[in-house]
Length: 260
Image 1 (cartoon, helix red, strand yellow):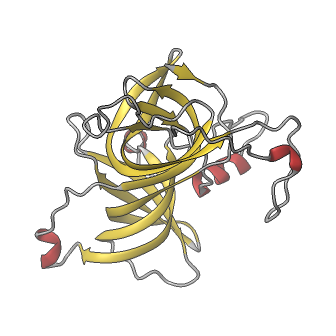
Image 2 (tube, rainbow, N blue to C red):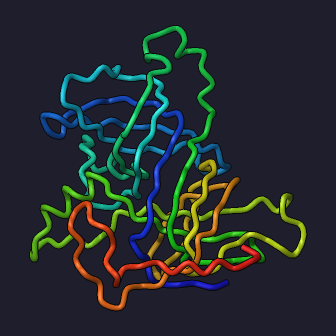
């Protein structure tokens, strides 16, 4: 099993699908935070809990509790992030944070339709990034896409020398390929340091170890994947202004392997 310790920021991740949003509370005059419950349905994890924010210019038309189809950016939950929970015990229950980009109400919590809904529908994850672990025999790979989220941005703004915050806004994913689809020798498991884009349903949250540090990975059953080439880290990273194109020192080399 090949591994890489680098986690470049040429990446993105978002979740698309159905979630129950409830317990709205203000984090700022134009930002509302919701608890988001998403179905996972594994033998060990029934559902995941996220803290999702939505920025709004005007009053929101969201119910206090409802079932929504939504699109949101996401990152793993770490200690110190503000999810506006009522207690430390409640805060410890969160699995991820993120920002809602679009939403559509399926059924309000006080409606008859809500009582008859099938809530066992998984969230779909779409991600791109550089592979850090590759396990061809196990038909698995790991990508740790780094994605801007407001919860991390707020914490980084408040970081000081006395109370530093060094965590990155990443969503560690363990992509798993269906062995029944790939019985021959050509298995589409990406190599380490290859850039990939993929999608699939969130089916588990698995615990792993990074040395002595516990690490949760969001398990995605990959149903489509594209291979973009090899990532070449910049020799001398240069600052990049907002909205500008990458400098010559931040290019990605595309060397696509014929089998991938």
